[in-house]
Image 1 (cartoon, rainbow, N blue to C red):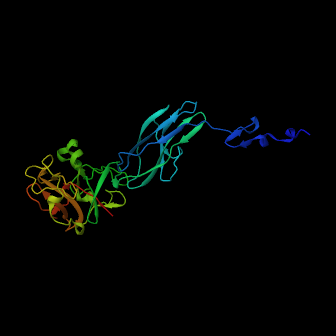
Image 2: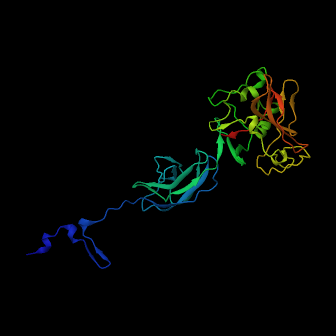
Image 3: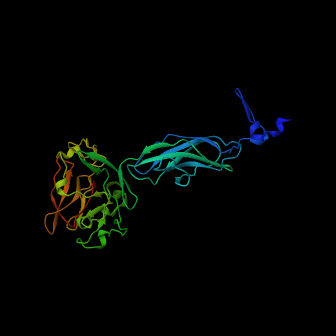
Length: 312
C-alpha cells in the first residue's frame, strides 16, 4: 500500500530539527503591510504635542498614507484621531493638536499600503495643565501654595455661551463690556483685553473648572514683587522688588475709566475680584512699578481692568 497517498497536504508539513518542509497545500498566509516604528513625543504643551515615526519598509507595496493616531486608550487606530504626513518610507514628523489639558494620551505611528494599515508601538504622554477659553486661547498655569492660577491675563472676547462681549466704546459703564487699551489690538495681544466688573459678574467669562477669585482668595504672601514679571520690557523702571519667584508673571495693563479714560499702562496692574463692596465698587488685586506690595483696593465697577483665573 502506498501510504503517501493517504496523507493530506497538511500532514506533509514535517518539522525536522531546525528545518521546516512545507508543501503547497500548507503555505502560510502573509499580509504585506508596512513595517514601522513610533517616535518619542516632544514639545508637549497644554493642547498640542509633536510626534512622528519611521516607515522602515513598505514590504513591496508603496505606502500611500502615514502619520500618527492617538486616543486616551492604549492602542489608538486611524479610526480615532490622526494626522496625515505624506507617503513613502523613511522618517516623518507630526503635529498633534486638539488635545485636552492635563490628560494622559497614547500615540502610535501608522502607515498604509494596498495590503492594509500597520502600526508602530504605542507611546504615552501627558499634556500640560492649563486652561482653554471658548475662543481657543490657551493659558499656561502656575501653582502657588494650594492655588493654581493662569500665567496669562484673560483674552476671551465671547462669553461661555458663545455670545460676544460688548465693546465698551458703544455702551455706558453699567453694561458688561470689554475694551483694548487705547483701542489698540497690538497692546491687547500683550496685556489682554480690559473688562469692567459687570462682565465679571455675569459668571460667563471663564470655562468650567475655573473662576475669577473672590477677595478671600487673595495672594499669600503679600509681597507683590514675588508676582511681578522681572525687567523693564513691560514694567516701567524701576519695577521695584520684582523677582517673579512665584511664576505668576503679573503685567501692568493699566485701566480704562470714564472719568480719566486710559491710564497707567506699564506702571500699574489691576485684576478684578468678584467681591463687591457696595452698589458702585468692587475689590481688585493691585501692584505697581514703584513698589513691592500687593493690595486689594476698591475700584468703580465701571472701570475696565485685567482678569486672571483661578482653578476651582
